[in-house]
Length: 181
Length: 181
Image 1 (cartoon, chains in turn green, red):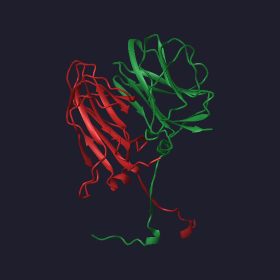
Image 2 (cartoon, each protein chain N blue to C red):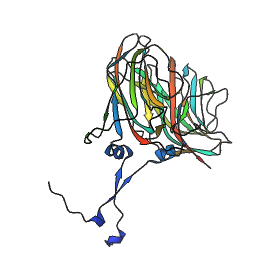
Image 3 (cartoon, rainbow over the protein chains, first blue to last red):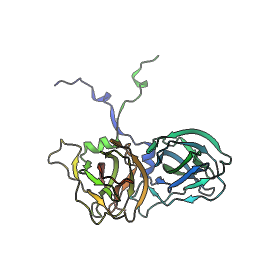
Image 4 (cartoon, helix red, strand yellow):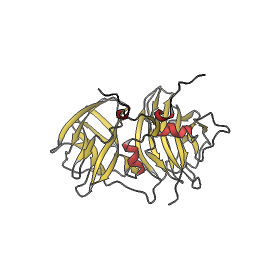
């Protein structure tokens, strides 16, 4: 076997490259979590998402979301930035830091909330994208690397349109990091 | 255009964390046997970081194979307790096969089929639906999920159908010395 001669002074250096999300996990700032089971159907709607409380003092950098559609019908989800919903929401406890080697365990400032059988529409906010989700499937969207940045008092919500005469069960999951302002 | 040497960009080789840790012999792949579940029983597999391991576990990739005709749901858990009835060890190999003797992992992997108990403790951070006759391959987490000594990453498979489902789970991770604080 023969090698091409490369003088030492132009040999490329080797570097281990960490993505921004992994760097923030090392720092104990990366979190994963999902909503409780969300149900809707008929003329009812549903929503779920990340809510950054006004007093949180952090920005959210969204890295990933997934939508699990447990029904045998396709469903439509709309992505909304900065929207709110009237009525009660359910807070999820299924949240953990990506870095579990830090003691004491760390928790996010951000809340994962959702609501089933909703009648109202999103209040304020901006409708930014639409996703169709196949039946019995998990739609995954990974590696945004903080493309959506959500300040205190704002939100990233997925809003589920009325599916017609069927009962639908879904869960939504998120991965994000938080940076102090 | 100038081609003076001093104005060239510096070339570096981009090594991923999994690639680098594989080179060092710290990257491991664990696979279960065929796991049967269904008709109100679950299947489970997890990689466990023992309290006295002295390493952090950097979880990388999971794959879940569904050999059946119906989709099922996989729940991903951090730090759930090991089920009291399990079916023993899964097979682990180092991804770097060029090292002799082969490096041994500090973490170990257990599996369980036809599980009748719920998982205790821990957080169910997200779910994935695994479609029939397919292998779901997760994205590389690149070390954004870190588990300290005494913790675990595990996957619980649940089917709503009455039929027995055949499945298999592969988990990959690397290990780095845990810093004492």
